[in-house]
Amino acid sequence: MKVPFLDLAAAIAEHREDFDAAWRRVTSRGAFVLGDEVAAFEREFADYCGARHCIGVASGLDALRLVFEGARVVPGDEVIVPAYTAVATWMATTSVGAQPVGVDVDARTFNLDPALVERAITERTRAIVAVHLFGKPADMAALKAIAAKHDLLLLEDAAQAHGAAIDGHRTGSLAHAAAFSFYPTKNLGCFGDGGAVTTDDDELAERVRLLRSYGWRDRSVSEIFGVNSRLDELQAAFLRVRLAALDADNERRRRLARLYREALEGVEGLELPVESDQSVDVWHVYASQVSDRPAVVGNLSASGVGTLVHYEPIPHLTPAYRAIGWKRGDFPVAEQLASRELSLPMYPQLTDGALDAIVAAIRS
Ligand SMILES: *Cc1c(COP(=O)(O)O)cnc(C)c1O
Image 1 (tube, helix red, strand yellow):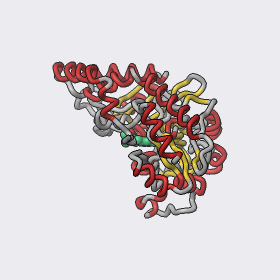
Image 2 (tube, rainbow, N blue to C red; image 1 turned 45 degrees about the vertical axis):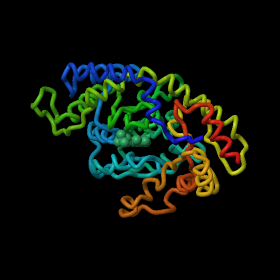
Image 3 (tube, rainbow, N blue to C red; image 1 turned 180 degrees about the vertical axis):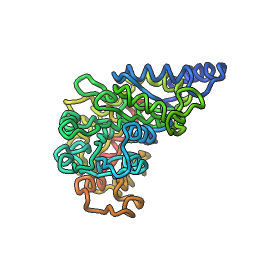
Image 4 (cartoon, helix red, strand yellow; image 1 turned 180 degrees about the horizontal axis):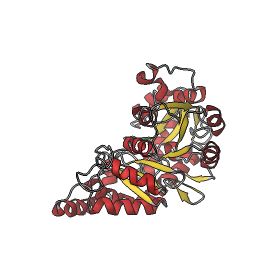
């Protein structure tokens, strides 16, 4: 049995008629930029997250950048970012001229280690970016306390954690502001690029809203310098369809995570990701660890099972960041995790038969 790492066509097929209706609705209206669909999606997603504001933007990277610009993070400022994350978290910081200050992660959760965050703070630190990596919320209580103590902006990078929650509060409402990506493979994905900022801060929301479209409140009247980073009507219409199914889809991921654990716990050479009872994890990625990754990948591939590695290299070991002085040894925990990480197939449409085939392949 062939089991692809991801099957987006299967996800889209589940809502084919609703997507077709969304397409007809938008194209018959003939308005494609910042219209009714974006406004409706922004309302619905803000409500879903439990935030006052949602501003649709063009990507997850832009969501992070526009929060920095909206909050006036400026060149020379330092921003604390986890060593283990998608490169976008670091790039967003670099692209506004700020200095990403990497901090090592907790070996069990892959998320920021709050004890190390405190030590990385200097008088130039402006912000902390808490990434909810692989769908597991970061330790927000500890990070909030640190941010409050040092008067820092705390930002969620929630690109992998739509619908995840702590104590009944969903991501998007757990810090000063949050950045989401709707890249097609995310738990809530569109048919191209898209993103959003959520926040309770009226002034920040207002500035991000202006920044995303040339600084315009009224068309062609630039009140501040902005960019073109808009979520478009079609993507918003498709996202509304998928948002309605998000909780059910996340529940299917959570069930698969339980089945993986039941079937694979105790297999020698394989370490499974931890399930937290402190939070609702939404399993964007099922990140296991193996001791002999090339052999495991090769054998699974020969059995028809697709896997991926998230991430090789991690941000500070990419050529771009090595060129400005980062090096192996800077983050021992993250580097060790990255050398062993292996992502197994994890998506709502993964069938029980496919899961059995993956388990059999791993066990053999
Ligand atoms: C995907 C992702 C982003 C960036 O999103 P894009 O829409 O691809 O720009 C940022 N942070 C994390 C953790 C991500 O996984």
